[in-house]
Image (cartoon, rainbow, N blue to C red; front, side, top):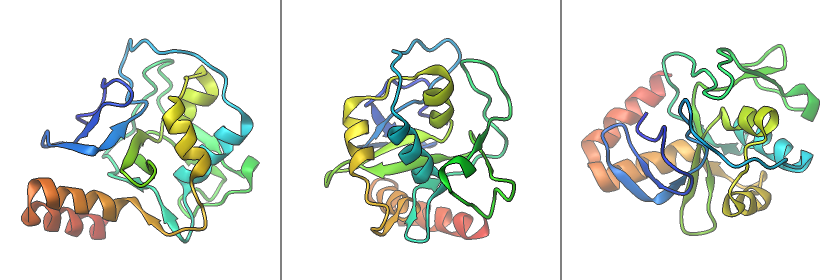
Length: 178
């Protein structure tokens, strides 16, 4: 992915290298990336888990990858997160453990854009005390889980804006096949 190794609050880049100025990155670490440490509250951790798992009204995850991203901090290759502890369920996680590192997630950044982060961010925060940018935390605390949100649709809208309708249509077809 183009965003691995980008510093927090950088502009998002698609796999084709197109920059989305409306989307800021958070937590796109690579091996050896230095990061600030800060413990996050249980509320932040729970909200981050809820965003990743999603709901009937809210779909934040998108762009699944073929394969699993290992944690660049500790090297763990198959990071499973216990979503049962927050009373969350997911049809892809029948045993109550959600596989991190196979997709990214977006949340609204106020009215002006979005934050993009790998689902592995949850592991970084819980296990490695990754310090989240304050702007991201504010958006996470303001995220309305009852409101309609469709990150894949927002992504397609931006792809069409920056890369054209043909590329957006091809991605839409790929999304429907997944």
